[in-house]
Structures are given as structure tokens and as C-alpha cells.
Image (cartoon, rainbow, N blue to C red; front, side, top):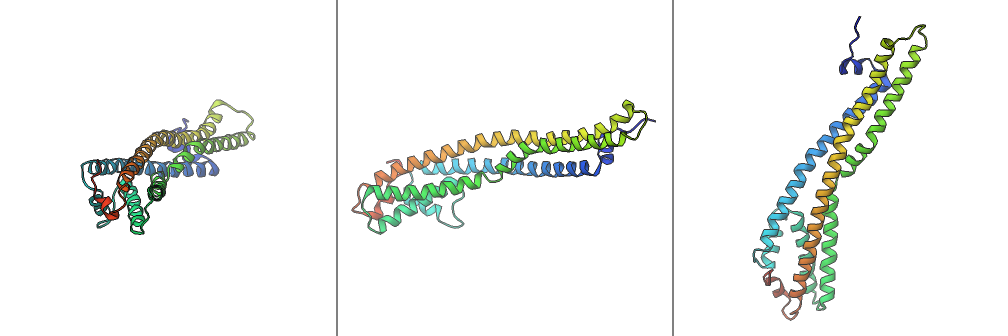
Length: 238
């Protein structure tokens, strides 16, 4: 009689521990794919929003106009705009307090932008560590299921007087399914992690460059300290 060696049958007839391992790996795989799709959409939105603000920023509008847009309504929509708003807010607060030293103005604005930058990076990198954990741990979990399944299969064979390949194959095949599912969960997670890490590095470099460029603009605007509020009305590119 031919034995059913389909994947579904192997999973169904596997030992309880191996079935638990398979269920865990399948759950982790579904969760990692959810994170992958969410990251694809989220990072695309971040890039588009940052590019949109970048175009507005260098379009010749004044800092005051950009700041009013950033703080109007529901608030800034892009990470780069929130960094700009944080730096501009601190810069204007220090000017209102009659801080006249250019270094103090720039240090305050830079610290505010750095704090905002770190918050944005924490948000952008959210759940990336989950993909890294899935990619590194899943194969070992699958291997544990395989080892346990093979042990269980050979324990059952110890009571048989005659062992053939037909009696050994189903038990070993059931155990190896756990390793296959572990690899199925790990490979997409590793590929996605590496891709997202590169994309996030590019976004981080872009935002760090913006902080430096905006700091230079604030340095030029901070030079004429006599008219404090007027500094924010200068054009970005000038």
C-alpha cells in the first residue's frame, strides 16, 4: 500500500512537538510577511513625503512660510518636515528670549533637530529587528523540529524487527518538513531585512544632509541679530 507523502499528510501525521514547531514557524512567517508589506508601503511613503517637502523647501519660499505650513492643521506629514519644524521652533524660541550668540542659536536648533531625527529613525526602523530575529532564529527552530521528529521516528522503529526504507522514510520526511518551513520563514525575512536596511540608511543620510544644510541656512539668518523675528522671513536659498 502506497503511503501518502504529500506535505499536508506529512504535517498531519507528524508528532505533536513537530506540529507545534511547524505552527509556530507558519505564524512567524505570516507575521514577517505582514511586516514586509507594511515596511514596503511605509518606506515608500516616507521617501515620497520627504521628496515633496524637499521640493517645497528649495522652491524659494521663506522659512516663516514653511514653518507656518509645518505647524498648520494636522501637523507635518514627512519626517524631514518634522525635523525642520523642530529646529525652526527652537531657533525662534531662542530669538524670542533675546539670545544673540549665533553659536547658542545654532546649537539649540541642532539639538532639537537631532532629537527629532532620532525619534523619526526609531519610527522608521520599527519592527526591523523582528525581521532580523526571524531570519536568524527560524532555521534553528526548524532544525529543532527536525531533530525531534527524527528522534521520535527512530524511537518508534525500535520496536520493529525488520526496518526498511519504506518504514523509515515517512518519519524522516515528516521531520524534514519542519526545516523546510523554517527556511521558508527565514529566507524572505533576511532578504527583506537587508533591503530595508539599505533603504533606511539612504533615508538617514538624506535627513542628516538636510540637517546640515538647514543649519547653514540658520547660521546665515542668525547673523543680523538686531531684528530677531525677521530672520525667519529670509528666503531659504539666500
